[in-house]
Image (cartoon, rainbow, N blue to C red; front, side, top):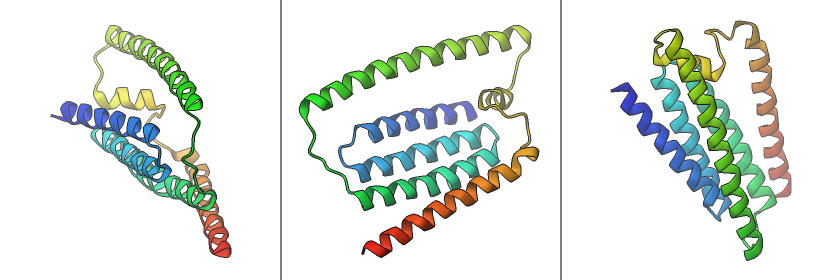
Length: 166
């Protein structure tokens, strides 16, 4: 049942990410980015990593996307785009996405072959290996908190800039 939920939220995150990069309205793209990050957080929960899920929601879906929205609303977004530029961007995006999929497929197959030859692993162990953690953030907790304070100060700065212009 957990595997089915993992696949459902993974497919949803891919769909939301595709919607985020194909929207012409930047606000809608940022909101689809929030949905992408929330579905990834649910994937982390299914894999048993509660800390990563909470960090995903608070840091990325909360702080970073709110900062993106502040910047979008401060700068404004022009929806007037050249058809040629859109076409070039579309084809270069397809090429970059294809290369990324090939690299990820090769890496995932090598990881799975390595794990299948050595021993049978659980889904949680494989997730921890793929994410790059070994169980604890003990020595990096201070760095993580300082990064959070930095993001918070950037949000406050963006708020003050927006308030002074209004």
